[in-house]
Every structure is written in structure tokens, then in C-alpha cells.
Image 1 (tube, rainbow, N blue to C red):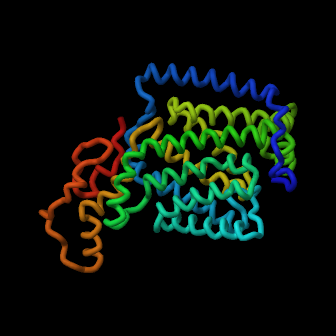
Image 2 (image 1 turned 30 degrees about the horizontal axis):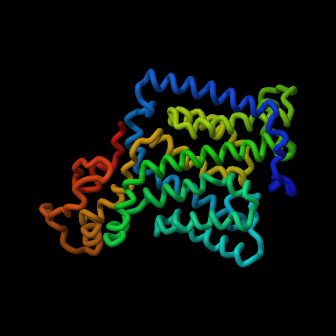
Image 3 (image 1 turned 60 degrees about the vertical axis):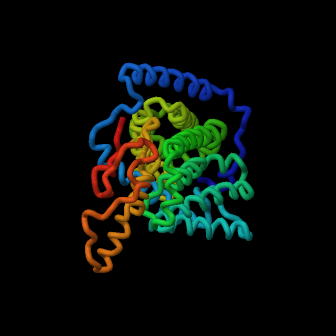
Length: 357
């Protein structure tokens, strides 16, 4: 993004231009259509093909990897989350830099991942002391990522830790909902602050990367100016954000979101692509969990420790004798906090697959 325009304040007087009306009208029209479709289908979880269940165990891992790679890259550039948030050469700036590297390490390696998620929460809140509030609010999805990975996790912790974390399982649905809401808000804020209320910023970006105006470069529509294309991109981005916030047929919204976000990948400069990686991870997770499906992921990560399977695996890796199949299962792991249904003692069973409703 061109220097000098990155942290430019939104021009609030532009709020009443036609793009705002377009966002309002398009969002209302699409929401009504999706709500009608949801009523006709009788479920908010459509589409629900069987193969989604086999993809589900990787959901938080994909999200953590995408976020970790993006975080470590921008930390290497002395930036926080995105290129526009350049960390100052101060004690707080260096503290945020070190903390971001630690978070990235925990996410990529899956070591102490929940501690890294808690640290990411602190990093995000501390960013308000360094950068303008609007610039930090544009990255609200990182707050959602931290909440999801804190609650759901991506690893099997030791027994002593698992006993304390099991109480988090009751908040799985809330964490996924928070991720959806915060991502939707981030998209709306970015659409207005970087495009609709800051047209000079989007126009400068398109002058630097003219091929990104695909309606002009690919379709030859010369009448589509950079200003108009920037407004159009802002309308689409804000509309997607609003639909995510409403929670209507979330999987359909995510599938529609994949079109503009993935078609532009070859046109993005590498640094912009790295900034979009966390969004891709969020899209993967929300595609699986949709509109409020209870993930029951955290319990599956805790189950091997609670049932003794983790200890058995450690004994096998140490070359000790394989435990007998009749080894008792601790009572506290006999059912999930979410459903109350009995689960098999082995975490290598179909219990690891999401039970879609």
C-alpha cells in the first residue's frame, strides 16, 4: 500500500455516497433471499455433504497455520498483522514484536497453542496503545482467531492441563460465533475505512497494481475507472461482512466469499497474499462449522488425556509394554459436555468426526 496513505483517517463525510446505499440495499436483498432459502430447506447448515465430517479434524490446525505464517512474516518486517501497522522503535513496540513471534511459534508448532492464543488476545488489546483505533479494529478477526484457538485448541495437552481446559468445551459454539461476528465486522470496517470512505487509498493501490482492476484488465471494460472499481470492491466486501454477521446460511456465504477472495490470489502482490492467509483459514473453519454447529472439537483434543490414551501412547513411544485393552476409562471422560452422549474411549475412532445436525 502506498506510503503516507496507509493510516489515513476515513473521510466520514463520504458515508452518504451511493456505495453506502448499495451496501444497505444489496445486503437486505441477499439476506431476505438466503433467509427464504433457509426456511425452505429447514436448516441453517446447508449445504452439508458427508465429506465435511472428514475435513473437520483439521479445522483449527489449518486456521493456526495460516495465522502463524502471516504473523511471523509481518513480525520479520517489524509490522503487526498487516503492512500498514509498522511497529515503533520503542519498548512497547519491541514487546509486541517479541510477543507476536512467540504467538506465531506456538501456532505453527502447536506447542502451548492455547497459551499463544491467550497471548494474542493481549497483543491485540495492546495494539490500541500504539495505532489508531480504526486501524486496529480492521484486524478484529485476529481477536476471533485467538478466542477460537483458546477454546477449541489444536493439540492434546497433558492430563493436568486437560482437567482445567475441559470447562472450556461448553463455550465452543460461542467461540465459533464470535469468530464469525468479528470477521464480519472486520470486513465491514475495512470496506469502509480503506475503500468507501478512503477512495484515494484504493485508487493509489490500483495505480500501483493496475491489473487488479479485473473488469478493465481482463474484460476490457474501459469505462470502469479505478475509483468505481474500488467502490464496487468495497460494496462486495461490506455486503459479505454483513451477511456473515447475520449468520444466515453461513456456508453459502463462505462459498460465495471464496469466489472474489480466491480469484484475486494470482493478482495480489505476495505481501498482500500473506495478509489474507488468516482470512483463508477462517473461511475454512466457518465452512465446516457454519451457522452454529456445535464443534465438539476441544473435547476430542482433551479426550486422549482424560481417558488415559495419551499416557498409553507415551508408554508405547518409550518402548514399554502395551496396556491391556481392558484398562478402565476415567468416569469424567465418559460423555461430552456439549451433548451428554457416551463416547468411545479411543480418540482414533469416528468420534473425531463432527456430528452434523
